[in-house]
Image 1 (cartoon, rainbow, N blue to C red):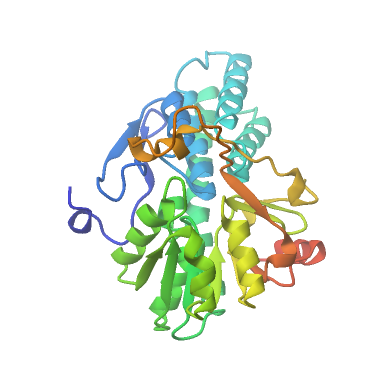
Image 2: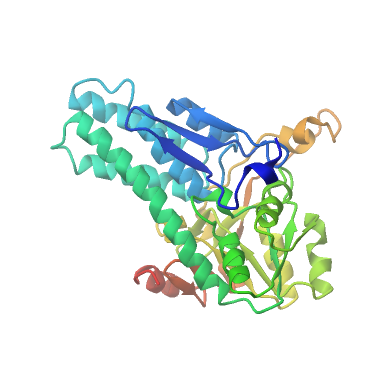
Length: 360
């Protein structure tokens, strides 16, 4: 299927179809950019597999998918008694929470639905089920609005003609809207700032090469793909004036976990006196953690490194270390772009101040 002809720039990462007995349809991102295919999730197990296998990825999108997964899980096994419904809700939430450990939006969305249920025990089971679907849809809509506001806040930080580096994919495919980091680029382009984006390929699963470049090309924003190991030299050549990435979890002091390789990019940016920004919604902050050292880091299968996309590239039996994320200390982050404004400097006090303010 020719993606360029089939999709508009406003890619719908996922959408709920029907009422409480409906289902979730999402893009299988593991097939992009060569093939566009949507999968239908009719049960919670399919949603769990989609999150685990990165068919849906990006912290905000994972949270939205998990919320809809709860609704699917309650279609069966909830029973007619309230105690059975509550038990099933707990089982489904716990099951979904096991899919990926780092992206805090997953747990934030599950907690939000469980809290709603706890505070709405006066409703019948069917009323509760409908209310949980409404909440999942509200999470999706709120994310869309947050993406727009993040874009507006971040675009103000870029100047006309800037070269901007990004790592992994923090675009529409990772959210329900225009993304986080890519929302900044989309808004800057809309304002006529004529930016040029450099996208790291993002080993080992190439989210930058497969997804970020594709999204930017759909929007006709100039983009150049580079290998991860080229970032420092491109900075040395003065082609980069700013770095903007997303995040999967941000601790209370501003330390930010993002796709593996982000920490290295931040160090390079610091060495070359280039501002390094994180773009993320308030739901990505985990204020229960004082610092990034407490963020759990997911380790993934060795085959992602040794057999990338089915082709063996390493000898049999080689030992592999494959963390999916790393943590960039706040001291290397120039500012965090949120829907509530820019957090700068990145300190615990400033994080709390901005997050407690109203959205811009």
